[in-house]
Length: 340
Image 1 (cartoon, rainbow, N blue to C red):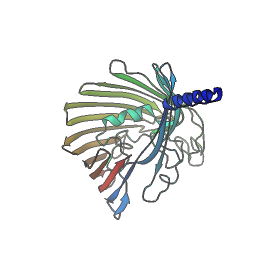
Image 2: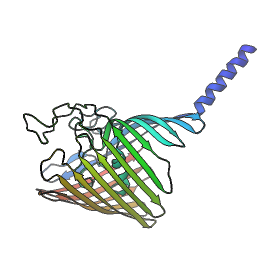
Image 3: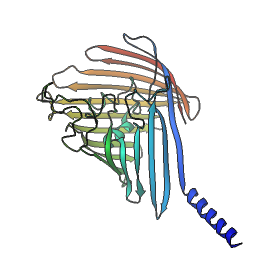
Image 4: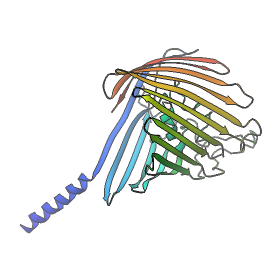
């Protein structure tokens, strides 16, 4: 009898622990067809395809342990995204959350790069019709010393802090280490024979990223500053307003400073204006932006997208974009996106 009572007690305790923990499997599959200037019709994607795992454990007294693993893949071939990226290139982070906010360590999107997506009419999609990785950030990259094909908006070997919301404001911080990440050489102020950063070189300064985000009623805003591993600086600002429930207007401004690795013409500015307008089960995405490097050709991009919801998790889309710089590149794409 005593053994039975002990077994039941242990089983009950195990069940209580299990009830306080949760793991979620999530992801997205996006596939379509696109025609780009001077290229044949091809199977492509509008946004990143992902498979992720995230979980929390209640530690008591308002404290939680949390983790997230996210991989990227190509649905038309089943391979890891771009074939050159790490398995969990999306993010790999573990941390703690409580009244003090949230602290995480690992790999993930930087504070500035994460905050700006709320002010992007294409919601931070990485495909050709989006503005995420070029115009919106003035051509800046958060990972200049990582291998070719790595994401432009993440830190490896990083630490993140997200504050609680205080008067509508959230403060987000992230910082990386000087560890070498195995990337190609960066010539910079050196020469091809003696580059400023040799292949596989560590950072010259620890990268960091700071962003303040404000949200209250119909208004939103962000202001951020970031310095990467080769001391290129990014100043980023964004503003949005919802004058009515179905309409969101937004704008961003970015200034990249490459003075540490360029002897001249080190500044590049970028700006973007856009709108999202919902009509029934559909939504229009509109954006226009420019990237202006010092003493170089200005890039101009206009994009129009339309999404039609077939359900809460699935929508079909059509996009058209025109990007003009040294050449004029037109893009036409259609596809389907499913979240799970």
